[in-house]
Image (cartoon, rainbow, N blue to C red; front, side):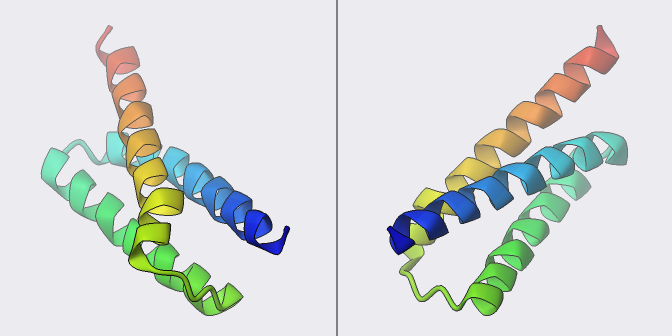
Length: 87
């Protein structure tokens, strides 16, 4: 059960941060800077959670429970804001 708690917690945090970064990326108005900022935040959040909760999982676990979720949600939110602005 403890394992599931960490998965749910990390996925939830990555989702919230990705939504925020999707909006921030939209307000930056420069695709390259927005992408770099999103990746920097992804790395910072990953290291922050590793440090705070002492999660000693492999890179594959972090990709499945964090990076993929973060990147998909971020690009979807960014696209939604962009399309709402253009249309």
